[in-house]
Image 1: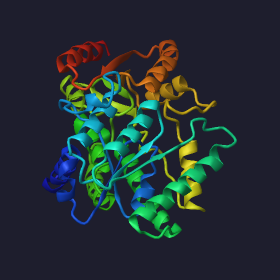
Image 2: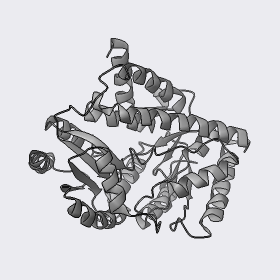
Image 3: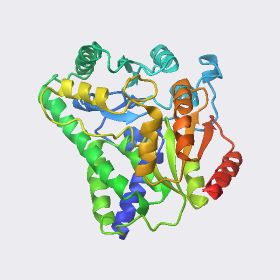
Image 4: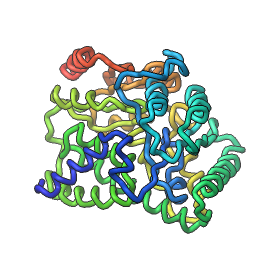
Length: 372
């Protein structure tokens, strides 16, 4: 990798790790709109004139949230609300939620009550039963409502061409990430995931050219990954807001051969496409992609879907990275175990808390990786 490309990688890593309080200074001329879930249509946020920025949890001590959320709420909700209450997110134009669980629904209401100044707050009510006869017309109507409200707030005209242009920009990100997935063996585990975090943090007009330059360099590197002697694990879960876990995997001599995470591969799955009505295209995208554990799709078999991904990634074992008190992902974890057991795939469950014990994580990961 050339010096210039190392500088690009360093820029992406810095963007991924920089606190949101610094966002406005780092990207003048862009107005950030926060969102907390990959079921939020970031393309609409962009087409309305904002830069969509994913709000992530942090492992820093919580100072204000105990007065608003119980201790048995997941770390993502508690940490992000604490960031709002401490003023770290005052530069955001607002925050967009998607209804995925009761905790996130309550989070949206608490955000409205405690938002700074005139911050915009909305929740996109994606259907829970994705195959229901009413799911498509309902979702089209909900996306239309959300798109109109965003444009009313920003003053941008709700033109289809604006939305198509934003869909094309975000599809380009997804294409670039798909290429990056094929080249992940050339990057360290922390660096690979930092690039994906940067995609959810930086304005896409800035991120896409940087990643395209980096990929041009990586594509000239070693073409094969089958000769990599390191044990390979497949990561599964919701958000992964503890980058030190990735450092541990790297330090213990393993690689992350693939993942099914809300902040990684699941977030960048597939393409929306430019065909037809853009709102209808977005509705199709959300209804047809592999569902999050908070959604019900009767034809989706969590165990079989996971096993297929693990085999395609040629991973030796599965590491479930589950937020403590996250019921949808805990239920999904239980549904996948019989399939993994039958296939002889070893697995490890790591319940992530606000301030996890890194030494405990190291001990459990080391034993699991040595077994592989």
